[in-house]
Length: 253
Picture 1 (cartoon, rainbow, N blue to C red):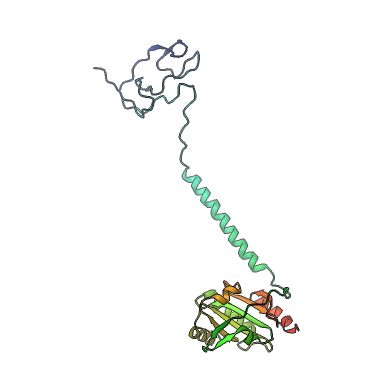
Picture 2 (picture 1 turned 90 degrees about the vertical axis):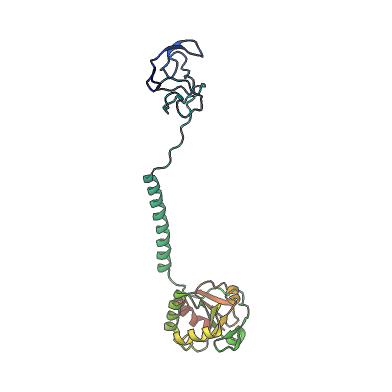
């Protein structure tokens, strides 16, 4: 009995398209270049169904995959290699790192503002409890004089660092003629008292319990806002810029 796993000898057959004699182990007709019927096993020449994955006779996966139209069946795309994926991840990481470093360098080297900004829309008045539980308003604390608002969050480590820089710049006693008002985002009067005493913060510390006052002022991180005598913002930034523009704000009529 013949072993079906052994290759069958080539036979002379006729091309089904032009009738030219060809050998059964040829993949295409030498006369018209028409491919043999898809599914023919290259190992034992058994004619399998066109969509067969393995030979029904010998189990070989080496089947002719060409269509009768003469077009080669498109190969399945190979998955990206690990080296390609590694290169892609490395390139993205370098791009992100460069963006972050550029942002930090830019923030560190940009000079602080050298003068007052054009006055904006007057800041809306608000009424909040201070560190002693007493209700205070912005209009009452400013009372026709320049004001320095500094907004912060009590549970923000970076805010504590910035508050320390503020204390170093102005001390615990505000400069004469200016009202310092701290806005503690989502704070409480006891929390405001504790932070004022521990850091020796200048002025009154108001507990912005629901964050509405900070939200109306556009404060989402530690921010210093200098208001003129009409409560119009003339500076928004950090401690360094505030120390430069405060004397000019005090000189405004």
